[in-house]
Length: 459
Image (tube, rainbow, N blue to C red):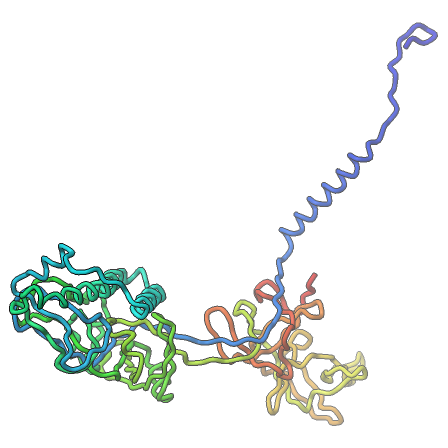
């Protein structure tokens, strides 16, 4: 645009304020400040106290001892089993046969016998075996997979072999077959390991090393010689498990006489009588005697168990919330009540003229004994003289003690509360409820005691 003098002047645009950009900028700055404060401030997480229980369990892997009789073959030939492993047979009942000619083996392999089907009861047994194996399986004992395989195969082979046995008379081959009947009643097991005659007093530390343990699985249709082991019978329902513990726990169990045991294989719980063995090496050997449940573990030499030694109920708090704090010990007679009803002590002070006087110092009581109160050490110092109410007696602060507790944040600041631990494991502790200076259900405490200081305000 040209002026009167012919010069061109630049046109000035009016200032237009974009309200949207301003609002966005303010919000952006606010978000940046909030994020900065979040990462720079202490992260104090609360935890609400609830009632609960805590079982203090100890997991051990022990050696099972039973009354076992190994039965050997009187002839040579191919072994065929008719009783399922883990099944109870009576004295004189047929368990297996030894086929000298090998015709039964050929029949089995060729499938000439009639097909068998599992009954409802046998199906239920298989389901229980599968469930028990899954509950007790550990990758460290992978060899147990093969034992489980042989157990399932034994169930199927029993049905097939029973069909073959029914056809023996019609085939005219019974003269070549030796029938092996049980010499006494018991539970049939198709494996040996050399521990059948082992006594509890003979167990050593080295026997717990499973890398040196060898189990001989007896398989259907295998060729056996005269004198070979063909099966074994567990003849008594009373049995034992030997575990390794420390001397302190062993003494505790011995004093209790009986302990509750949970079997990890099937989660069943049973009571065992306790006895302590001598000569266990660095560890103490403890023998647990049972009078039931043997049939569920008749094929297992090493068994995982839990010792349920405690089952406490109370207020449940995480271990991370537990802290320790030091307090002064003051005789109870030196604690009084102030004008506003607060607890406190009379501190001896001196005026500018040197005259002795007293000053009421409010202080919180955190715990008490028969003679003393635990009071806060942040408002007093070692060497301060306290005056006994309505007396000229004085007490010089010199003693202190440590309390275990948590930080209560119900009032908006970290207030230390003493706790009494009844039971504790790796994650939680059960504390006594309804104590004078302690916690109550639904109190809010600091989850991690290391993130807060005493009397710190909680935002």
